[in-house]
Length: 291
Ligand code: SF4
Image 1 (tube, rainbow, N blue to C red):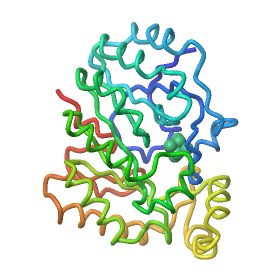
Image 2 (cartoon, protein in one colour; image 1 turned 90 degrees about the vertical axis):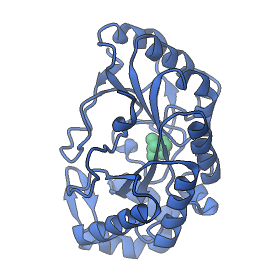
Image 3 (tube, rainbow, N blue to C red; image 1 turned 135 degrees about the horizontal axis):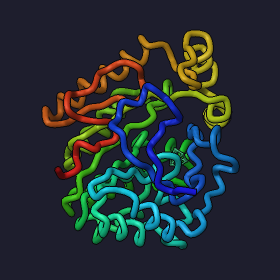
Image 4 (spheres, protein in one colour; image 1 turned 30 degrees about the vertical axis):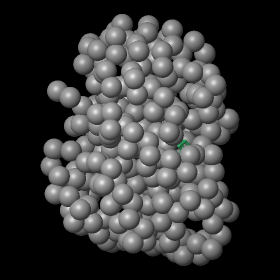
């Protein structure tokens, strides 16, 4: 079975990114974010396991592709989630991507990506780092196994200092938990000070299992969240969304903050069903690849 496949965002037409390929070296993810939706698609998702013969199979699939193809690693797990710290597959995979002339988009919450800077700086790659909040305690509750927010900021900084293009994903914004504009502004300012030039924002989309985990972890928001998602919200392509007026209000405010800090800061929303994006920039940060 192929390990590099055409990216199909679970057939969700709200995804507006350009076509590309995707590779998930790990099945599942060890960061165990309470809001994560992969548990709806992947069995035993929080028990991450490296795919069998992944390096060999990656090279087999790379032979089919043209140099310059865009490959996202990964969109249904974090490629630097445990067990990557012990069973290293990203280094040989990145070397292969480089040797085959591929363009690579990495999405992670882990500082472990800095281990591979020596390879990344010699290839065409962009790294997106997700930070949902700067509140260390809250991050520990909602992203129990992911590195704390300050480590992720440090990671952005290391990457920028080494000339690797980065994107900051404030993803997801969770109503009544992380939708405080002061906190978001602080995060954007920290990112801009580091040298971030692209920000992606999305509002939490509920699936029954991630909603259950989220409200168990943060019971103080349950009543308000239920009202927003179940009484006022609606289902779009398999996910329960808050009403559009709430999403527009939050995302427009965030966009205004990005403009306050830098006119050069590209802004995208992700799978919202309306367009607040800056022209010429993409949610997957592929516009930051060298042409
Ligand atoms: S890092 Fe991403 S894939 Fe991993 S558990 Fe968190 S949200 Fe899910």
